[in-house]
Image (cartoon, rainbow, N blue to C red; front, top):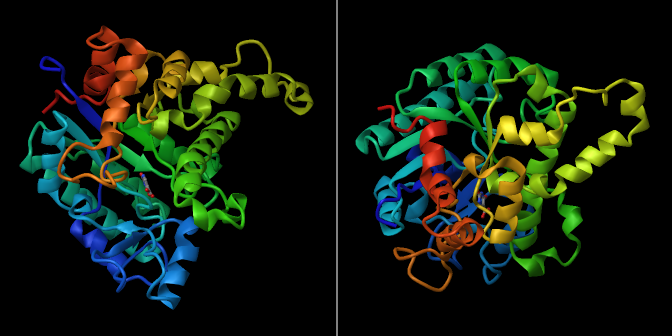
Length: 374
Ligand code: 5CU
């Protein structure tokens, strides 16, 4: 791996002021201590509400959420993680649920403070760290647009991380068009990341027995898939041709389902009657190859091969999802299996040392996200 530059495009942090905000909250997302666990717990997902209530009611119940370890907020820890895994450059981003829950009157200031903190962290490790900024989506619209202008001028900012809620009506909301236009004009790549998954009742009455597996393995990817399918059907990609999106978790299930989406469009009487299926239409396959990049956080060569087939090996980018998915039984300061699974998937899909492997492990990110510009 010596002449290989490894770039991690999917790696999160919560800066200290964000953790403080979570500590002050009584509804999710929140950070809270429980007598039954040594570390404070970070509770993020609606699927964790049952465990949260049980732990509040019963001090012997299993602790909810996940431990809030130093990996979430410490810059030294991030660098240690990068060094341990031979990661040369990381493009860090705030983890979910970003500022989605923040009051409108505070969102602009908090976004500015978080983005300044990310800039500061990147400046401390010049050349090794870049970041995706955070948008104050709940703020007044002019504040939101102003934050994009500010991000454009931050030296280490290469895009924004975006959830699927948008302004409250998800990403096919016409009110978002000026936001997508401004991001595209500013050459800021949108890193699309899930948080909300599926409604809790989808997981059934036995969900408590299954840990976090269903919401994370299935809910997250479906959320991303649905968000992008809605954007595609609403014509967002045609209207903003220079919009560039990097989709988390290899696009959810989009590479696998693109053919089915296309077939459903071709066979939809309403869309055909409305003239939306005519010649010259850009298919979802076009969008996947022209406007979408996929991270390689899919943990198996099977999914990765589908992603490469859909978008091309020149559009895939390695990621780790640090600090999520730490090893459960081995030392967190050592190697993480979640990282090696993704690196091995690349090797198995395209061959160790191949040009495609070099591209996916780092060269694509360096080119697309301008990581050689200092
Ligand atoms: O483990 C989890 O809940 C998560 C999460 O919330 N966000 C993420 O990016 N990965 C895993």
